[in-house]
Length: 453
Image (tube, rainbow, N blue to C red; front, side, top):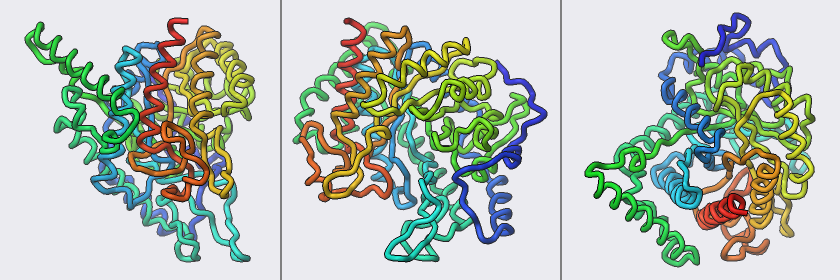
């Protein structure tokens, strides 16, 4: 289905609207040069990949697939190294394997990677010991060190971000094309921790079961099961820095549509989802599947306005609502939001982000999230959607393939005291590799229970 030609929209039309969370650059001439240079560089993704992603998301919206979207809260340029990228891909593949086995439906794999370099902040400025400097807004904008030079927004970082994103996705593609994601060989995905993990046996049974099933079906059919053997992988990031997104937005003549070719699946954060704001204006004109983070602060009219503005044709797979209420508020807020969307006569893909609404401060002063609250919110999301004749089509998780200690709980029972051991995030706490795999096992179990209750 093609979007109508929008003569009132072009990639820079957002400049006529109020733009939240945008950095202030000291040298507008240098910024303009960088944006012009970015606009001439090759796209990071291509339009047919974007269209394929939208079709896969449409299947999740119908209940025929399940979306697993995961990765770092904020990538850093230092993360652009082969081992880190491979570990992140491995944990997403392992989670997908578990979900595929438990849910008995295809899993749409989307990484929060290859572009997740900009972060919204609650304040423009930060003060330490009487010194006030611009807040760190991610490596796309400035640097984390608390010095005037590091915190000054630097246009050159937009080019560095583009390069790191392209390098990251290039390596992911090479791994997948080379058979790294082949379901025949889940043993390739071992992260090492399985040797001592309490989850080792459960994961091994699932991996063996899928490998045996593939061998059996290929044995009786006499040909390989290509679709199951090779996984598609898509990338996503928050489309926060509008000049960066604008520079990679291209008109594809054969489609007669505009695409953001910096990523497959951009999203709008809750802080920038104002109906009359610049982000909604920009997102309404691109043909990518798009998502919006929604929470209890969004009233019915706001949610309905987003549905009709961002997906006026009710195109399947076009619009995702990622709800992030927290375990405390989801029972009060999610039914109201489902009802509000239903009143528009249109549909969205519903996805649960159980991370952001469950952030709290540990006894040692670090931001953390409790595994039991993350699981509780997902469990309640399955129940509420089921009770209302809707369905949960996916989850959106902040995670890492590393052995960090940033979220408490899980199979090893991490406590507040454990957080100091390996707390590496510069922004938000992430599930470590073991907690992420445990969560996938529990999601599969909960989904099965909800389907058969």
